[in-house]
Image (cartoon, rainbow, N blue to C red; front, side, top):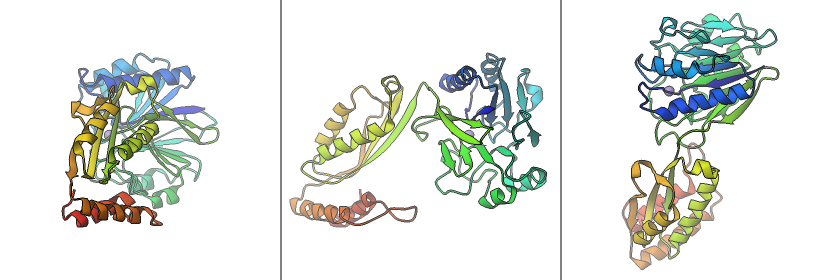
Amino acid sequence: MRIAITADVHITSDDQHPERNHALEDICSQVLELGIEHVVLAGDILDKGVSAVASLESILGQYSTLTFHMIPGNHDAHLTSEMFALENLHLYTTPAIKQLAPDSFPILFLPYTPAASMGDLLQKHAHCLPPGRWYLISHGDWTGSLTAWNPLEPGVYMPLTRSDISAYQPARVLLGHIHQPFSSGIVHFPGSPCGLDISETGQRSYILLDTSDNTILRKPVHTDLLYFDEMFFITPFENEESVFLENLWNRIDTWNLTEEERKTAQIRIRMKGYSINREKLAEVVQSALEGYRFYKDEGPDLSGLLPVSDPELTWIAGQVVQRVQDLDWEPSQDLPTKDEIVLSALAVVYGIES
Ligand SMILES: [Mn+2]
């Protein structure tokens, strides 16, 4: 059996964000097409308040042959099952163990609980589940990776730790809360199916869990809009604009957009560093990105790009850049990238930080 999992749709009332409703509809339509019956909504399905309940019902109501399993997240922790009139929606407001098919592992649904850790709740509810033979669905932070966090929500929300995993041994963990699609070992965040703002970049996805072999498959969500936020480090060279252009094309290649998706993209381009011709860079970026839509019509942001003109300092800068590029250097969580090293070095050369 396959189960579809999404989270963090953040549906609002009164069509304030129709793109979020459309993303959920797209997932439901795909799931229907694939012949899958069960859809898990792992928290923050509603953004806030109760008025979005009707919006959510009108979406889920179109798919009466699907069965929805929903847990509250930190945004919709106030939901109760009495609020929903839909028959095909199960809302778990307290921890619940469910087996969706006779031959698949049981699922522990852990709704978001303020001021608790996932470990606290697992201690109470997971001890009766056979190690390696159950799934966890919940909503909160994963402390096993420093790169997994939600920039919109500082603080720690019902965290799950590596030691919780080794103590209770779920076969797979599927969590809401982190909006960027993310996987780390057996822990998976589907991510928001439609970016809430420019901090949620790139293709969006939902997850299919195949209970016959515990495999995970990410499927793209077709959204009304996609965000891209790209930073470019500029070093002062005669040919700085062609170096920039090449980097820009490479970056756009990594977006991997179809012609149709390109029309939905909203982009932010930021430049940081030192330039001998800011005017030319501004021209080049505008003409290269003609046809793309800038986020909030902001245009490229050159505020972090300092003009430099002293040819001797620029010669020294060139030597410095070459020296750093030649370094045998692996950046990591604790070590800066080559670009960051170059920027710090150029701040010394020019006596001013970009
Ligand atoms: Mn959320």
